[in-house]
Amino acid sequence: MIYKAKSGHPGGALSAADIVTALYFDILRVDPANPRWPDRDRFLLSKGHACPVLYTSLAMRGYFALEHLDTLRQFESILQGHPIRKTPGIDMTTG
Image 1: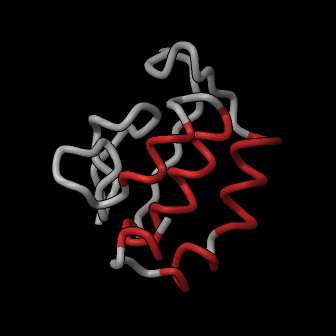
Image 2 (image 1 turned 120 degrees about the horizontal axis):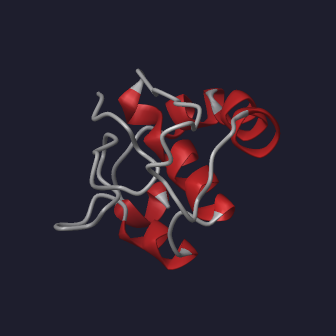
Image 3 (image 1 turned 90 degrees about the vertical axis):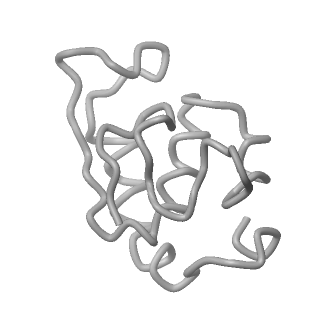
């Protein structure tokens, strides 16, 4: 994803891979079919440049199609260089 975008921070994303995976697949109470569920747990990625790992987890959980991962950092993509609220599953823009 970062390689295809020719831009990004692979080290930052990889450093957060273990915790983001554990949270999204074992701990957080979330519902990809209802991303704005009022009783969901919230996750805030303060290190916004590590968002590729978050985007991958969200896609794997079903928040959006895996094909969107190929659009990282492209104009009008829902997957920008830092998390933005227009991305399903993102509660706050950070970076």
